[in-house]
Image 1: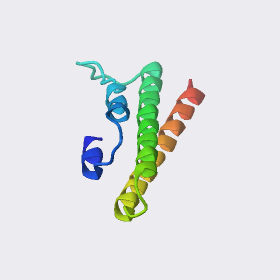
Image 2: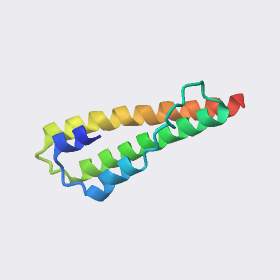
Image 3: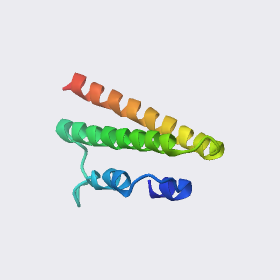
Image 4: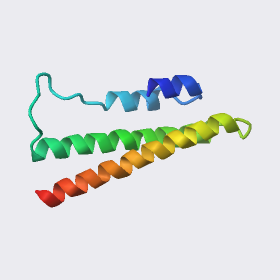
Length: 101
C-alpha cells in the first residue's frame, strides 16, 4: 500500500492511509496448520475488509486529482479495478465458506 501512496503522492490524508495499515491483523506466530472453518471465515473477512479499504482509498484519491492528472488517474483506476476484483473474490470465498459450514 505504501508504494502506491508514495508513487501517486496524492494529497490523501494520513488518517485514511493509516486506517488501511492499522486494520491489518497478522496471523498468530507459529500457526502452521490448516485453517478450520472459523479461522478460514475470519481470514476471508479480513481480506475482504482490506480490499474494501483499498477501493475506498483509491476512490478518494481519484476525487482529489485534477483533470490534468490523466496519467496518474489511469494508474489509480487500474489499481482500483484490481482491488475491486479482490473484493469480489473475497466475498465469494466468504459465501462459499458459509455455504459449506
